[in-house]
Image (cartoon, rainbow, N blue to C red; front, side):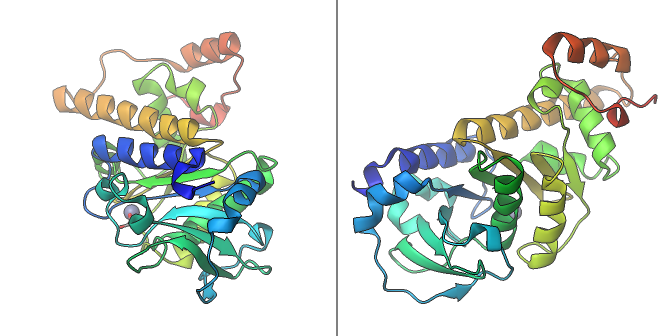
Length: 275
Ligand code: 2HA
Ligand code: ZN
């Protein structure tokens, strides 16, 4: 099968373009990766070349040895992906130790995978282990409202989770485990990848102070949908703050407990503190 005709590639491109249309990807901001299923790799194997060197990932992901990923390219613009996927995306293979990758397709005019490849692969490794292989999509974007909130709320998991839950009733149902936060760190390296993947052990979404957000999901719809809900909730919260600094009424801890009972989700009590 032609790689450009593969459903996973089309779904990836559509999601990237949807994210661009939402305004989450200025210039080369953000990145996306998909852990390709074994049967999908088999279908495209004849189209993968073997002309590149192994290069260091910059961290170690032994549980991803031998896996193939579709990833965005470093410095590439989300707005261009839909026009020319083969120039802006890459399929990479991870070696048998989980320390190096090789480009097997894409980046036709040159380039390397996303600068956040350590964070993407470390997040994939955690999610593969903890979801029995179900999660396949890791998505990083730069949404205005989420970044803005990191200047006015304490960078604490409990606070971000509670405020996002309170801003839209669907939120605790969509992300009952909450969201994690990471204080400002230099992007692109191993340290921020370690900090993020540690939070991914508890959460499917991790906010990077003054930078953006990472989401994890089983498929493109779930990863995009999670990002979309968090961003919408952050939009609402900022609009509330723009009108007045306090809320006249809100969803209470008891309301959340009632919601959890009827929607059959578990909402950890650490997020239901008295204010
Ligand atoms: O420019 O988003 O975090 C790509 C990024 C780096
Ligand atoms: Zn970024």
